[in-house]
Length: 285
Image 1 (spheres, rainbow, N blue to C red):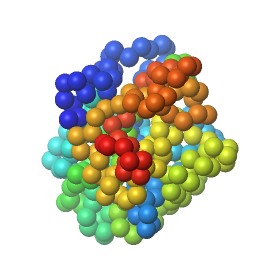
Image 2 (tube, rainbow, N blue to C red; image 1 turned 45 degrees about the vertical axis):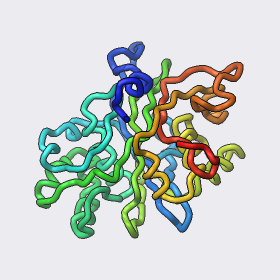
Image 3 (tube, rainbow, N blue to C red; image 1 turned 120 degrees about the vertical axis):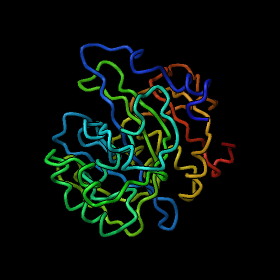
Image 4 (tube, helix red, strand yellow; image 1 turned 135 degrees about the vertical axis):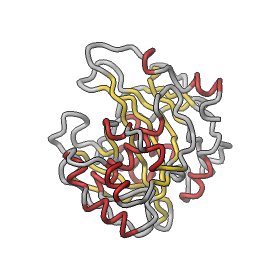
């Protein structure tokens, strides 16, 4: 079980136990949006070249958890959050962050069943991004709530030292709303596309895409699935696996249990993934 004794310990230390330098570690969250088109596709973004962190890289919607994501009203304004985030405090705030960031970056509202209400929230994406309004205010005014039952945690990664910015990031997967048409904000994200995970990895290996290890790891895992339903089914009670690397951003991630997990030259990371290999590989979850 996520949050269970042994798996919780294996999923990494509490934030207070992670080594730090003069760069503080911030909470962050990202979501991998999935859709059957008709086979499994993932929404991938390209970050602006002007960014001070992972500029020009391919990644998923997400960002830092902000004060509004901790709003105490979310206890009444949301429902369906399932799964602890081992080692991370206030797990609800990470889920709220991915809903907010997905609205801001790609104009997609997760967890809102009413299409009119969802469109109204997206229409305020600039106000959300600027901080002129909080998502809790918009949800409350619309007399609705967020259904977070479809937002499933699958990984945790902490930016290593040294870095100009450090994040303790929760990774989630979610099914994209039916008929959604992602539109990038043009600020943080400058391009969005639906892609097969295996195709994204092929383009990365060819040097067409630049990705950091957490993104590579998610594409590696998702390349072993055929449908969104398969991915969602695998998020229940999945065992946590630690991650090792040979070189950041340039080589595949090694998952605990892989034959080359302890290969010479690999090193441990502050990365933990609990989405198992899928049926395409023939591996058991």
